[in-house]
Image (cartoon, rainbow, N blue to C red; front, side, top):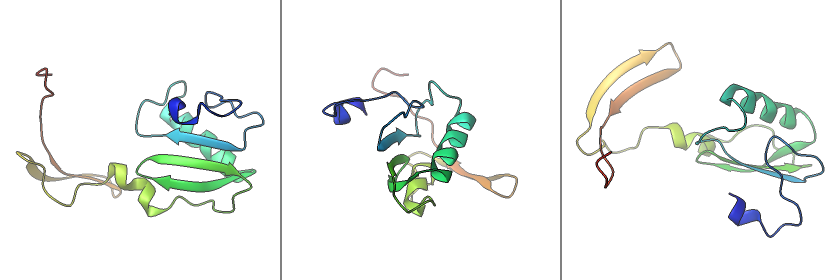
Length: 115
């Protein structure tokens, strides 16, 4: 994300916020330097305070100081939803992990290096 915001006078590495008026997070990748549970808690703390949601889509989250919205919109969660079309070469399944999570299918593939 840094190349997209590096024109700003000051850029912090999250969870450092200090006097920032905006916080931009990609929660789909590694949560370094925080554990994912700690990341979730720190975002909830920001939302309970002065920050609100300026934009949230496909696992990206833009928080802004003073923004009124405090609830993540449905579009934020699309990064973890199954595609509408079956995956090429994929297998269908219906494995449930409690009441809130289900594995509907999967596909195994390799990149151009065979990994």
